[in-house]
Image (cartoon, rainbow, N blue to C red; front, side):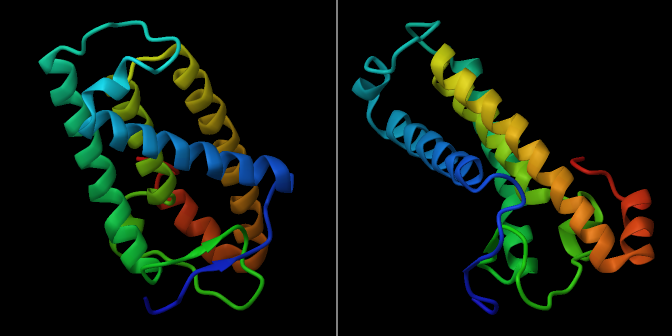
Length: 167
């Protein structure tokens, strides 16, 4: 909890930015509820499967594990709790730890979590919300990259050349 949690400036339309955060939260809540309460599964609209085979549940666990492997070190490197949006004060470019593998490990972990959620709760409605969220988060990343280029110049451009955006 070195840095604390703060709200920065949304890099895209404010309502759209916070909508994606709400969808992300609801998706994670669905994943938790479906994991612990079997009866919750039958109340999800737009299901494309009535039962989830064990191999699908195993794949869900693999994607969850991959997401956690990226998310926890990213939060630690950024200071446990980080900002939502672009910084409004002085900050440091993170290039150590998991940021040596991915320029956006937190967002990449969201992609893994969404895949896990769809495997456990194969709903067309949930899939549409997740796809929408992935597209908007990609746009957020592009705006953040523009900001980082202007804030850190050549240092960020060199980092960008050597580390993948996602994985």
